[in-house]
Amino acid sequence: MMPSEDSARPLPADDSLRVQLHNEVHARPTARIRLPALVVYVAVLNEGVSREQECEHLRRLPGQDALRPQDLHGHFLRLRLPGCTLKWERHTEFTRYLLVQPMPGDAGLGTRDPELLSHIVLPQDWLAGIPGRTLVAVKLAMLHDDLANPQASLAQARTWLGEHAVVASMMGNQAHSMVATDFMLRDSGFERMLVLAPPSTSETRAGRISQRLLEVETYRLMALRGLPVAKELAPFLAESERRLADITAQLENKTTTDEALLETLVSLAAGIERATAQYAYRFSATRAYDTLVGQRIAELREQPIPGTQTIGEFMQRRLSPAMATVAATAQRLASLSERVSRASSLLRTRVDIATEDQNRQLLEKLTKGQELQLRLQSTVEGLSIAAISYYVVSLILYLGKAGKAAGLPIHPELAAGALIPLVLWAVWRTTRKIHEKLHSGH
Image 1 (cartoon, rainbow, N blue to C red):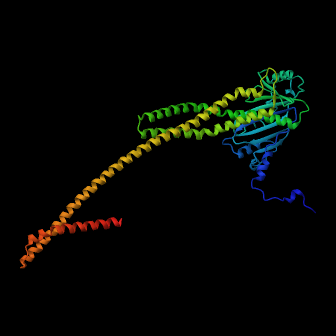
Image 2 (image 1 turned 180 degrees about the vertical axis):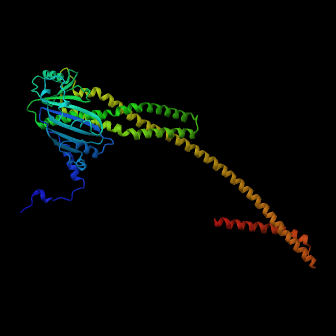
Image 3 (image 1 turned 90 degrees about the horizontal axis):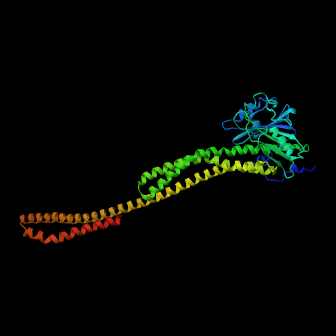
């Protein structure tokens, strides 16, 4: 029996990450939503929240007593509960909970600002007990409508949302559905969105629509987390720029010692590096989230409804200035760091030049000292030759006197005087040989 193609594996051994990387594309499948439906979405910041805590909270749901922390290691979990489906997703900075349940019958299109919280089919206070800090909370209603008259459908959507100013658009190249929202926080802490789609809308399309809309709102708020940081950093940057200008002026005018300038510059550089380490990630994350917002809005393929802003237009006017502020602050911080580095280089150059000048002066002093030492040494050597010669001549004189006393015909003074030139030459010659031996030894 021939083996099947799947079991033959005519391949080298798999890379250790191959299966994990391959399955990443299936890690977060889109929900399948049957209309009419109520989607309750909550995203919480998970800093300091462990998977064990999230698992413990999920165990409070009906029939989930056997849930284990290792079941949450895949960053995605879908739980089928009585009358609803709950999806859990953990990301780097936040965790998302998505509840999909049938739409209450008394909250359909045509009602005005219907009450929805009491219809949520979860244990009481379960939402309030989610570990973390709330970032996004949305009640997304997905209802049927034929959309034959977009203006009439928009009027009904505005009534359903409570007669507020709304942002709305037709979605898809064929305008297959409508979305409307007012981006307002209710007293309950939730926003509201409404999607109208014809009965022919598939469950997968409804799931993709809900995912894109909810991701737009999530990534919008995550991107905006960089704005308070930028505003907080602005006074520090202004003060640092002023200090750097002062340092540069002092460096130019030479009104302060290099040691004092260096101490001030090091303090400034340390503060800037601390700010960079503290806020660089937030600014990078803001850029990434802003890019995702743009991508999700593009995927909606919005078609405008006359007289009403689209979500893309709303984001362009409201989100872009904030993103520009964050980007300018990040660039300002990076530029300040570069300018401090250049000022440090200038100061180091000046210190190096001053150090070289001091070394040159020191070498000149050492050279002069060596010349004096050589002169002194020559003088001392001359005195030494004279002294040694004096002692040798004295010995010769005493020796001549001893010989004269012994009866030898010698005149000691004349002999000593006659030998003085010879003694001087002999001592000088001996000294020269000693010097030559010392120099040859080195």
